[in-house]
Image 1 (cartoon, helix red, strand yellow):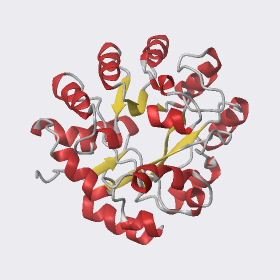
Image 2 (cartoon, rainbow, N blue to C red; image 1 turned 90 degrees about the vertical axis):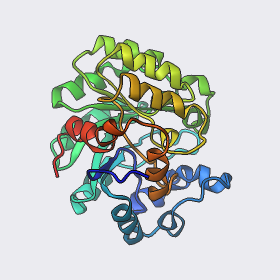
Image 3 (cartoon, rainbow, N blue to C red; image 1 turned 60 degrees about the vertical axis):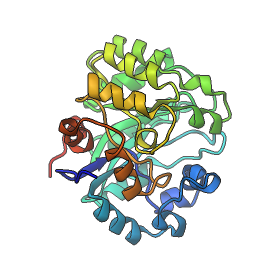
Image 4 (cartoon, rainbow, N blue to C red; image 1 turned 30 degrees about the horizontal axis):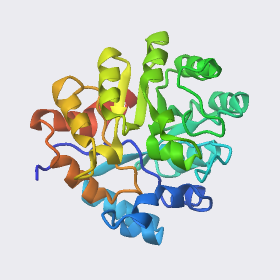
Amino acid sequence: MTTPIRPILDMRLRPPIPAWTCGSVFRTAMHYPRNLVSFKGARSAWTERLDLLFEEMDSAGIRYGVLMGRNSSGSGTLGGVSNKEIVEAVAQYPDRFLGFLGIDLEAIPQGLAEVEQYAGAPNIKGISIEPGSGVRPRWSDDPSLDPVYEAALKHKLPVSISLSGLLSLLGGHDMTWSDPVSIGRAAKKYPDLKFIVSHAAWPYAREMVITALAYPNIYVSPDLYACTKGMPFSKDYVDGANMFLEDRTLFGTAYPTKDLQEGVRDFLELGYREDIIPKILWENAAKLLNVSL
């Protein structure tokens, strides 16, 4: 196993703090460990101990974890976390966490007001939406999302669009809502906006990497779907990064879904080119989020 050259920036990490554990978000994120023997989960996740998470982050070489906002109006079992709690968490642990503000797509004006309130807070690095798994699923180029994209441009923040078949199913919908084609249309309409596709539209991996190839403002962040040995379609993300997405592929574990050390180990064994591994683990995300050591 190759040792990472630089610290790692984990683009999707939900810590065991009350903001996550008091509702359904943390339990839902433990879907794979609770249902599949191949996902053992982390000790800190099963015990919900933050001190253990910090030890596991240090052991895995993870410098920062991104707290990806979720506001879903109770769609399915997804739950949500308030932006106030995200801002407080990254302020309390500025050497551990970065935050993305979540917008409830059933309450966009309220979400935009919170973006105005919190966008300048320390360690707030982006905006997060989940259009394919909300109470009313929609495509990423739905006109109702234009104010979100315009707010992101105003505050010079990237937008994370979380898409996966499982996420749509847990939201109570069918998996077709995770198709990434509509992200391409949004990226074409807003060429100056950076789009991060969290979960990378799995299982539509081929469609995702081709969409990103066509639009240089799309970043692919497959997290557990490209840091899990044997995960179906993970090779498409690896091939995409090795061929043409080396500067726009991001690393994530989706903790607590994945044990951190296991996630890093599996990532390093999936076949990424040695010369692009530092980019994916740190450099691409650090540049995108304006983070330094």
